[in-house]
Length: 109
Image (cartoon, rainbow, N blue to C red; front, side, top):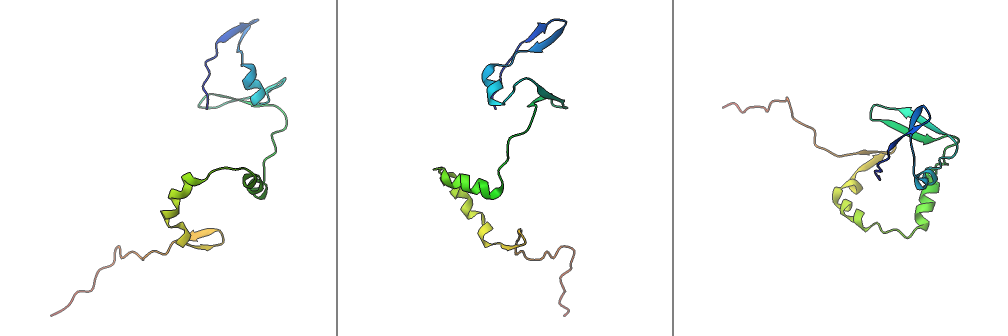
């Protein structure tokens, strides 16, 4: 995220900010924006239809066409996820049952 300091300017009887033209183009701001007041601050979003979101298959096809290096992810190969049993999209780890709260039998002499 890029932080940009903008000055509050007087506009008639109101106040406003001037948004740099590069930011207006990048976020597709044209004639109007939607302003949301949030706890963290003010959020500005472009008015009008939102950008088309790709489905998972479309995303996979687009990623496959790009010559992107994934070598930085090689370190995750040792995390053991490939040894898990997958059932209905959920990984089931094979763990030993805990003996927490169970008492061991004692030997009687």
